[in-house]
Length: 201
Image (cartoon, rainbow, N blue to C red; front, side, top):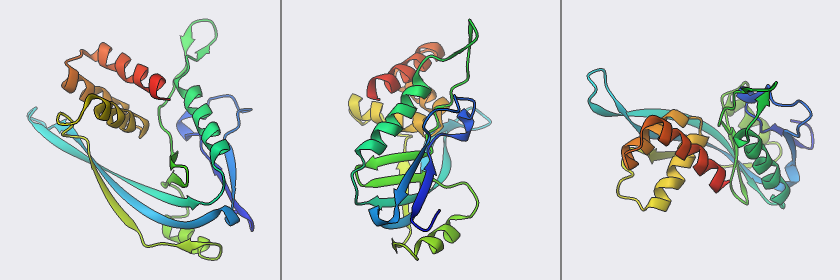
């Protein structure tokens, strides 16, 4: 944070081994932030207990959401470029593939909505307190998303939710869901999720 706006690094720390010359930071002026708020999100995913009985796992996410007033098209291009870097085939040396984590901590959920996954210092109340000097801070919001009952959705809706789950950092959960929904084996489900990410990005 500066006196004029926020520098936001959108590359996941898990992919810090990517080329250092890549553009991974965006500057958002306070003049282009209408408001900010905390969003607490709970995601329910299918799982199995110690006796292999069907159950659910709940994961909690905390986001800083910024309402933007400016043109976000260049930001969208930068975020999509980062996704392409993650999803592209990368190799170290002649043969060994590099590790690529499908974790995207900064999301443009709408042209005027930027979300930053908040698991850093300072804690989000301190950050929001600092933002009150520059923009409106709205009341916190709680959201729940259920990924455990996708059978009732259309194929397109299922694929959207599977991609959302994978891009949240739970690629294994997305693969497991694809196996349950479509009867894939492990290799086919993994290929499906990776091809889905390529197609929808």
